[in-house]
Image 1 (tube, rainbow, N blue to C red):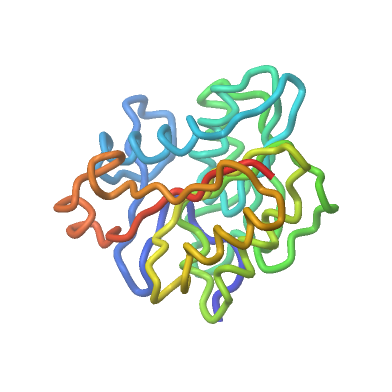
Image 2: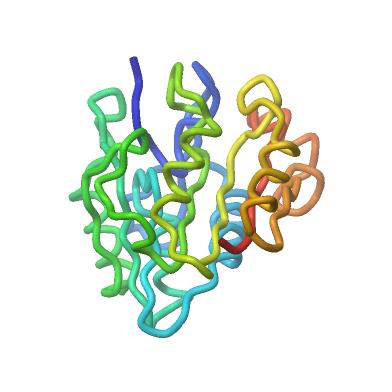
Length: 221
């Protein structure tokens, strides 16, 4: 059984194809997938992460470190923790790879730690922002809304979240109801934003890459 964060921005779809990074500088070890699309997805997600000066962001399921590094570069006066279990099923993704990529990108305000998305080793309300990209749908057998709750548990009151995944009803259940439950608890500006209709990719690209249903869950705790 696959548990916890897996490869980001990598393997998407249960049994689907591997989607990985392409960068113009050969020294980086992100494995290649369509560069323009990958950049739009990761940079688009990173742009939704709002961090105060001196704040800290948690990236759950950081994989090769792409999103963690993008957030760190956009927020040089804050820090980022990239967390992943780096399981044997994705042996090409390692903590050492993340650290190499961060160094190659000049991102000194990011660090990487081993953690499982099912039970994160962080205290309640310990981060100013939380984010993730194409991770939770890969956690076989897990309640995806429970995974979201576990991530949001680590978010401080007033902190922001930007979680990107394939949030189809078959995988996630009724996400409109989930969002309403967050609003009822005091969360603000909670939105589901489709990213497969022109925001990050068009419908044809999403279909080819098995990314139909890609959605950003954003808001403030």
